[in-house]
Image 1 (cartoon, rainbow, N blue to C red):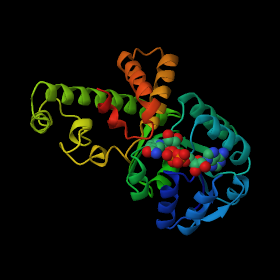
Image 2: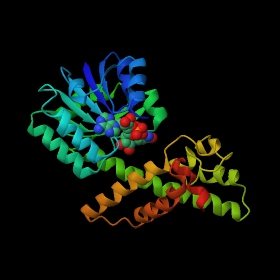
Image 3: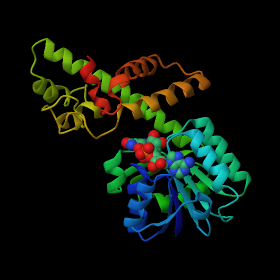
Image 4: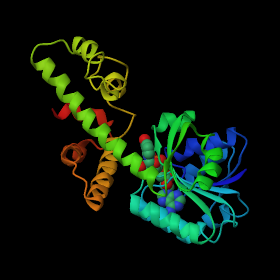
Length: 288
Ligand code: NAD
């Protein structure tokens, strides 16, 4: 397929490269010249205008910072400029309302479109091992799946338009809460005189078992290797976790959902992000 890829940052750069590796022809666009140069090295054809990048393509993938940018790119450069019948995929993490709005605009103009946010960070984007959670019609999902398979290890149809974003923010709210809980338990065990490694061995095989403890242990030198062992560099940035928690709390409000722990997790990450936005989100343990 011929695919336009818009947004070649930390995540999009590797994703576009994986589309090329899978045999797709990729037209790449980003506002950053450095990002475009890397995309060229990775086998993409680069463009300095998004409207030109979408000419003659069968599909468009976007990986952009937020909902306002996604909406302006689709309204200004994708809808009406991309050939009729192309499939559109927004893989950015954005608010549910904007995701639904942009898909409705695209559908009104005759396109199939999905929201397809990802789980997995930069390493998974580079390695082609992302998990995609996808919202859209059955037809749009079937068309998008072919493209997403080249960039991920799992592609799951979550439901109608916006369901991908809903799954993503609910998952990340749970992750934030479980990371803070894991960090609290590990620090408390340590303060009570229990060797943290012993606590890890016991809890990771008991009812405290969870991804934050078992697969992403937030204390250096304890449990599995994780960003904690690299001074909390790399991984999933605290600032991005805070972004997702804000989206989650906005969505909770519109749905009248009760999320007391989600709200508190957002407050704790807000305080922690003031000086540590670039550290991996598991570094929240340092604040306890
Ligand atoms: P990034 O800031 O590294 O990349 C965003 C890219 O978009 C930049 O290269 C920027 O120049 C480009 N851009 C901005 N406005 C543009 C426009 N109008 N037209 C074209 N390009 C434009 O961000 P990222 O880490 O790659 O994240 C992208 C998305 O993926 C975000 O929605 C983020 O929440 C989500 N996400 C990130 C991670 C992660 O670990 N980094 C994990 C999961 C999801």
